[in-house]
Length: 176
Image 1 (spheres, one colour):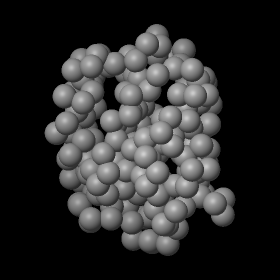
Image 2: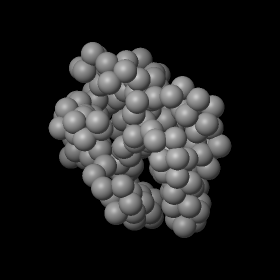
Image 3: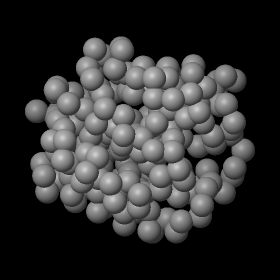
Image 4: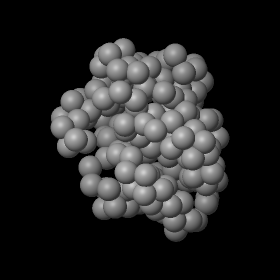
């Protein structure tokens, strides 16, 4: 695997600590494989769709990781709109024959409405794409998971990196 690009929102970026503390940085250290972090805080699915060509496809990656949807939930973007945006991303990546995996959108500590949306979005991703990277395993059930109820702590990001490492090692042969 030569080039992995991760695109998404603040969770991909590593907010509030920065990219050097993100799950992508942790996974890069664990795997010894460069992972380009194209996370942008605040991005919704439409934002990621709009920058997919420039920030991902133009780089000719060997694998793309998409981790999106939390901001759509918080801003109450209709679920069907988010699904449509995701389907458009999938179509563009498949048209270029670029393999991709989706990272599970992680639920929050105490926002029931957003969590229902996120759970529905994760079901859609599973049904549409098969297995998704189970980032919830790194976050839920740990007292030290969140800085602010939404964004992971450094320990949370490190655990997310380990979850990605495990997923990558178990699924890398399916990419060939």
